[in-house]
Every structure is written in C-alpha cells, then in structure tokens.
Amino acid sequence: MTVLTLEKQYGLYINGKQEQTAETMEVLNKYTQEVAAHISVAQKRHVDEAIKGAKAALKKPFAPYARYEVLMKAAQLLMERCEEFAKVLAIEVGKPIRESRGEIERAAQTLQISAEEAKRIHGEGVPVEAAPGSENRMAFTVRVPVGVIAAITPFNVPVNLVCHKIGPALAAGNSVILKPAEVTSICALMLADILEEAGLPSGRLQVLTGSGAEIGGFLLENKDVNMFTFTGSPKVGELIRSKAGLRKVALELGNNSATIVHKDANIAQAASLVAQKGFNNAGQVCISVQRVYVHEDIYEAFVAVLKEKTETFVIGDPLDEKTDIGPMIRLREAERVEAWVNEAVEQGANVELGGKRNGAIYYPTILTNVNDDMKVCRQEVFGPVVSVALYKEIDEVIAKVNDSDYGLQAGLFTNDLQFAMKAAREIEVGGLIVNDASAYRVDHMPYGGVKNSGNGKEGPKYAIEEMTEERIIVFNL
Image (tube, rainbow, N blue to C red; front, side, top):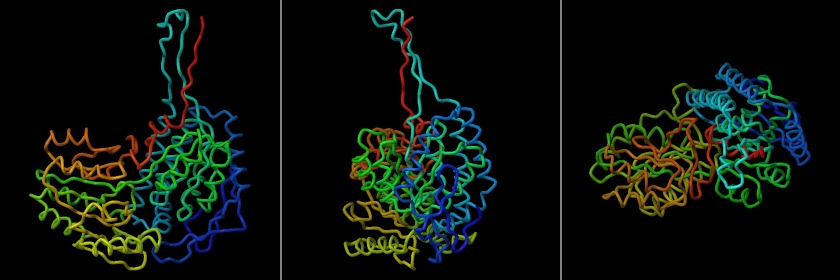
C-alpha cells in the first residue's frame, strides 16, 4: 500500500482480503482541507462477516512463540516503512512530520513489548491442599484468551494507540475487530498489511472503516464479541458499557489534565515541559497539559517563561520539517476551541498568548485569571489551550486538582519529598508524574484512569491481563 494519493479508495480488511464498498467516506488532508483519499464504509453484513471470521480463526492454532514472531516481524517492518507511515500521519492527522516519526517509533516498540509479553503469560499455583479434606489435591491457574475483541480507536494517535490494543490482544491469543476513527483510518489499514506480511493468520485481525456510531452499534449487537476496548469520549464510553452487558469492557476516556508547579520547582524546566506537552499534536492528547496551578511566589516568572517557550513554536504545514504544531483534526473542532476561549475571556480570563484561529489551525493559547468553572478548566478542551492559575497552600491545590470529573494523569514539579508523597496518596488519578508534566508516558507502563477517565489499564503487560481470563485447574490425586 503506497502513501496517500488523491482520490485513492481503501477497502475494508476482512479475513485477509481487501473489500471495496459502494459507499465511501472522504479522508481529508487536515492542513489543506482537500480530499486525500476515500475509505470504504462497512455495513452490518461486513461486521457480521468479520466477527464470524474472527471467531473461526480462534479454532486454528496460534502458539505463543508464533505470536511473538509475528509481532516482532511486524515491528521490524513498521520501522522499515517509518517514513511512509509518518507522511500518512502528517496528512490524515495533521501531526507534524517529526512528531509523526516519533509515533511510529513508539508504535514499533509497543509491538515489540507485546511480542515479548506473549512469551510471559502465566498463571500461578494455588495451595488448595491447605484446606481440610483437600490434602490430596493440587491446583494451578492458567490465563486463556477472552476470544473476539472489538477495539475502537481514536484519531489523535492512530498508529500507536492501535498497536496498544491489537498488540496485546494478539499476544494473548485473541482475534481482533479493529474500528479506527473514520478521519484517520488509512494508517490502520496499512498496519493490517504489515501484520499480514509478518505472517498473522487470516481472520485474527479484521479492520472495519466507516461510521463509528453505526459500526459500534453492530458490534455491540453481536454476542460473539467477547470484549470491547475503547479510547474516546466519556459519552461514548458510557454507551458502550451500558450496552455491553456482562461482557468485558476497558475504557480510556480522557482528562482535563492538571500539572502543579510548586515554589521550589525549576521554572525553566517546568515551563518548557508544560509548553511541549500542552501543545504537541495541537493539544489533542488525553493527557495534554490543560490546567496548570503555579505557586504564588513564582507565578509571574513562570507565566513569562511559558510564553517565551511557546512563542518559539512554528505553526504550519505538518509536512514541513520546521513545523512544531499543525492543524486540529476538524475545522469544527478548531471553531469549538475558539468559542470556549472567547467564552472564558467574556467571563474574565486574560489571553497571554494566542487566542486566534486560521481555518483548522488554532494557535497555542495561554490563559490566565481563569476559574475552575470555566469550560476551558472544567471540561476537556482537547486543543492547544493551557490555563494557568495560582495557589497558596498545598492542601488548596490538591483540592483543586481533585475538583474534576476526570482522573487520568497529573503532573507535579517539586523537590519537596513530603509534598510529593502527600500528592501520591491524595491526588485522584491513575498516574502521578513527579517533576514532569501530566503527559509523560512510555509504552510499557500501566496507563489508565479513575472517575470519568475510564477503567482498565493499557501497556501490553497490563492490557494482556484485561484481555485474558483466569481459569483454575484442580487435580484430585
């Protein structure tokens, strides 16, 4: 499969074959807003056919070492095609080319980690003989695949987040029905090509493109789907959980990430990392820095350095090597962010930098004089907007961070060990990052949130635990 070409149509990937459909959807070049390609739109019969094929594939042997070999080969092939994938990401996501290369490198690592974990899936001995009357018994557990897993992925990191779902799922011995975001489906189809070339048995991976609402509904209706793993909005996550019934569900649903900068922090380091991790990918990352709470003693100095760091970013064409920040995923999303910022200004916020839009590009924006009830603080902006507020006391700022419906990750810059330990105990998040911003993540760590940020963990080792069932075996000797 070649790099995106104008007007090219990409088919569904069902049982190892591409299938074109009469109905198609446009994939735009997010910078030029021109049509870059078309994807096929799956109907109910395609969904049912894919699920049937995925279920049938489970009956064919796919040993752990074979899974390891396939995933390792796929990682190698992905790196060999890194530049091709990066260019597709720059076009269909609007992600700057240098950042796109970084995503491909991380995706390859995710596949490698998944491959390694395929050889480490294990159970444990259970001392049933310690129970009265069971002296002649012996027991142990094994972990078995869940079965058919529906993986629904977002637009913002469409290669690595796909790998975080299909890598562990395949490593654990499952079959996967992948539904990528309709606006960024091409790279997922290219990844299916790579896995096929790496030797993945037919039927173990199916890729369905088209309307997320329709395909998701068809998947939820089909009882042969054993588990759903979803990254996206809380509204959709809640719908999936309500309709999945007793089936397994793992949800990663976003955040309005907070980062605390205490009075003893290195201001230059903190400001640089907040700028980098607040505005990369145009702020369209679940753990992007959104709320920054700075101690009153260093507040003015921090804001000045944050502005200085942010002003150095180059905004423009994602295919340009110099570009740091490209367009948002849709024009309407840039318009939404613009409206939220304008509303905050009407409510008293100050625009220290940015606050303007050019088509789908929204310029990196720093707001001050904000309050926690403004949309830019209370909800998930998912755009290049960072709001900075001051605080005086440690208990006060911990309460502010916790005053949120979300709890994915938070950051804390301090050299005060007591503060760090108190924050570790009291801040309500799935991950606290000390002396870095909220957006730190490596691909083998456990990653997941609390509250409306979802449930379950990603990171291959931890995802495999979600994607397997524990079965106990008892022998009466």
